[in-house]
Image 1 (tube, rainbow, N blue to C red):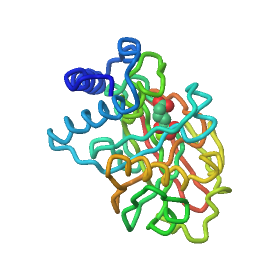
Image 2: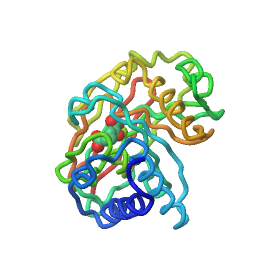
Image 3: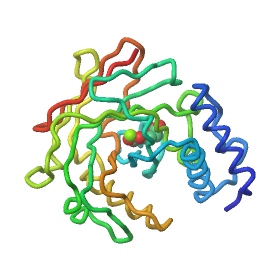
Image 4: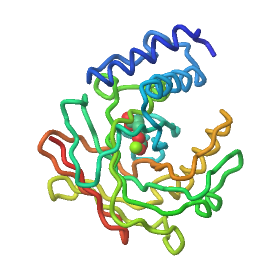
Length: 262
Ligand code: OOG
Ligand code: MG
């Protein structure tokens, strides 16, 4: 750790205030170029502590920057992990108020819901599939608090990996019998297909992203709890949205989920 406790608390307060007030900020590594990975996750955990203190609950976890398309879009080279609290959930076919966000983008993802907790280290695709109760189509709404979505890995980790909203829907589908690598997805904006891909775009298999998340949590003595929604990461580049847009994600054999921006 390079930052002291006070600085970590200040940066967490700053980033969370930007989120709550929907205003952007330069990336924090500009002021703290020597902060390290532990500092970055410590700031993220401090943001979580603030939210839990106000009565929020964690209902999901996410892996991000797990596809080549996303890494290339954001200019980074390794996955990141974050959390989602109950106020991030959008009901299927529900609305997202754009005024509450800075510059939202949508990502097509496969969501996993586990029947058994997953604990690393050593978690692998087989363990993820065995622990999975069902899969769902999921759209993540990311909203980096950083100006013009410009950040480096440490800054984005501290900012809880741009998490802001998500929707899941469609048909809860057992993992058995699904080939996650060839699973096709189409994301539509206002009825037009804007992003298409297959599961293999995410680390060869979206279940790998869930395994990486479990192994990451293990380094802090934590696990993925049963019942949590786990987003495995954008399969394609993220697509910008504005008020008036309707976004639908269709996943082969798993139905569709929709959200509207107002
Ligand atoms: C970071 C979060 C990326 C994903 O699915 O790749 C992410 C960002 O691009 O702002 O959630
Ligand atoms: Mg995502």
